[in-house]
Amino acid sequence: MLTPLYILFLSFTIADAIDILLVAIMLYQLYKMVKGTAAVNVLIGLVLIYIIWIIVRAFELKLLGSILGKFVNVGVIAVMVVFQQEIRKFLLYIGSNEFVKNRNWKNILSFSNHEVVSSRFTLDDEALINACYNMSESKTGALIIVSRKSDLKFYVNTGEIVDSVLTDKMLENIFYKNSPLHDGAVIIKDNRIIAARCVLPVTEKENFPSHFGMRHRAAVGLTETTDALAITVSEQTGNVSLTINGEINSNISKDKLRYLIEKNLKN
Image 1 (cartoon, rainbow, N blue to C red):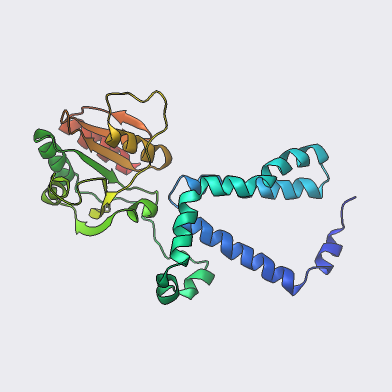
Image 2 (image 1 turned 60 degrees about the vertical axis):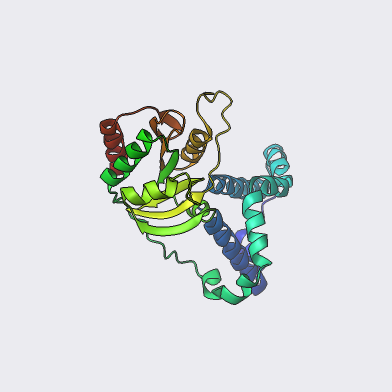
């Protein structure tokens, strides 16, 4: 038998309001932590399953409730497996002195998002293209990520912050074989080199072509879960490739690279 709505409202106390508020703050902060990663879609999916399970229980749909309950019962284990990197990072930060000294506690209670995501993208594609083909001639391996709408903050934090204007010379210096920043990926956003030596996820495709190396695997891995563009320069062949939505456009010319970059930045 369904509980009348007026009874639910009569039993609602200040403690219940505080409980809901704290859960809302916790979920929002968790969302901000995983925003821009593949984990955010999993988080949304888990929350939706839990909400549906509560509704199903309220309407006493026993069979569906039993099935969804199995997912909810293993939810903690699923969260630990899926969010292991984020949880490890969070626990390390909580245990450090920086959390106590530098944390802005107002931001924890704030539901406003101060980050403004621009729908327009600025990029000096000529500097980028020139750098890629200069490195191609010298067979200098490179992995360059061009950020669009997806927030790549998690991957930026795995590398070294550069925050420099995008120039062909700067990119070539970063990927020079004796440079301390040449390993990993460079992330570019709004015509600035945000970070270098960034660690990216690699694709888990079983049928991934064997002639592609780890740079291409990382390019596919990132673009499978974000809308970023990934440009790779092969250290073995010097071929330049552009990866979009997990698909590699390999061994492309300057003109085609320029066309694909301009086309996808307009979308």
